[in-house]
Length: 117
Image 1 (cartoon, helix red, strand yellow):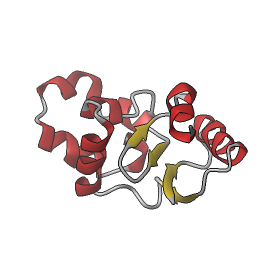
Image 2 (spheres, one colour):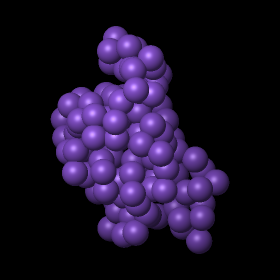
Image 3 (cartoon, one colour):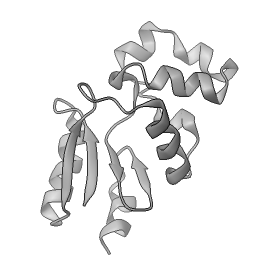
Image 4 (cartoon, helix red, strand yellow):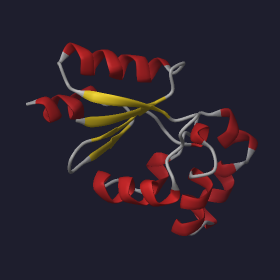
């Protein structure tokens, strides 16, 4: 069973969840606002996603903008980025789909279609 990490008020998360339901994918839901991924989890997610850690930041979010992260990220170490992401679920891009051996960050229907094949 997969873990679907999302925010219930996010329209992209709603589309992703509809996709999962429409394709009979079994998952358990985890609210990113009340149960933010830990530093260790985010580190594991980055490794399993084959994405840069920058892709895990919710760059359109209010918290991201309030903290001025657009100008700070390039000077931050990997460890510092992990620390920041683990402080607030609203900083983390969503949804995140955790499978047995891969992590998908954000909803990309083409990528997710490959998952269900």
